Each structure stands twice: as structure tokens, then as C-alpha cells.
Length: 194
Figure 1 (cartoon, rainbow, N blue to C red):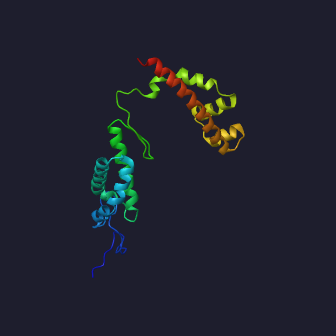
Figure 2: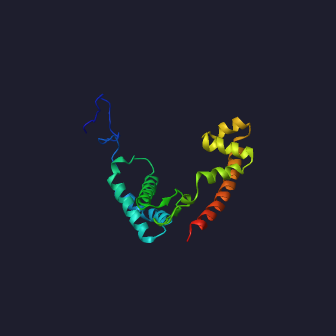
Figure 3: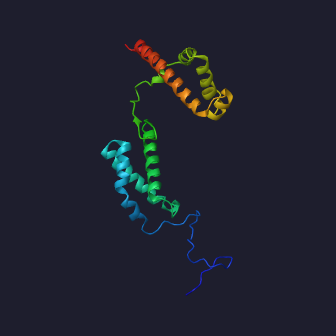
């Protein structure tokens, strides 16, 4: 048996050879492994797409991308997680391409393109008016978080309160602002409707 050695003369048996991109090539049964995960991918695709045909298209596009990118797959890592990442990215790309808003938890809000956005009925003055109705401590925490872009930890240090309190207070402030701006939105929309 011929002994394999690397440039330094070291024995390289059992060392995976890397392709030109520095990745270990996917095993020969890579396609079969991907195909075995079809059911799992389809279930996730259905939860995202909410339509059988769209889900099938999503799974097919995912599998195609995975096979094309098989040289970038790192052997020894979780192929299922890798495929789910590809699936999620394909889903997001498709929705963006079709003008839909997507959140990563799978919620999709498809607004018709001719339908005005909620923000079209709100102005900066509306936001400033809503902020003015807040108590001073609410205004301060909102200002620090969203205008000064301070972290929760920095806000907590600035206000000498626990970090968890910052999150709780901001949640309450945002809920109050959301309700006030919803009321303004409804009023402005009624004024604009024919």
C-alpha cells in the first residue's frame, strides 16, 4: 500500500481533501441524504407558505440550491439545519421579490400593492403628539432607547434601574404609543376615505 503524505511529509491518510474553496466535498450520498429530509422540509415549507403548491415550489428550490451549493456544505455539520436555513432564505427572497412583508417566525402579511400602508396615514407630527401624552419617565426611556439608540444595559445604568425593568417599561410605552397611533390612523383614514 502506498503511503500518502502531505507537503511536510506527514501521513495524510484519513484527512479529508478539500476542494478549491477550502471546503471538504460532500459525501457521495449527499443527494440521497437531502431527499430523505423531503418530508421535514415540506412541513416547514407549508408552515411558511400556507399553500401546498407554494410549499412544493419552495422545497424544490431549496433542494436545487442545496445540490448546487453542496461543495460549500461542511461535512460533520447538521445537514438538516443547513437545509432549513436555505429554505428560510429562499422563502424570504421570494416574498421580497413579490412585495410581501415577511417575519422570520413565518408570519406573512401580503398587502395588495395598491393598498396604502398604515404609515401613509401617519405623520411625524402624529408621533410627536403621541409622545407628548406620555409621562416624563416614559418619554425619557423611549428617547434613550429609540432616539439615542442606547442598549438596555446602558439605559438601566443611566436611570439606575435593573435591565429587566427597562424591557418591561419599554413594552408598556410601546403598547401605549401603538394604541394612540392606531386611534390616529383610524381617524386619518376615515378623513381620507371617500
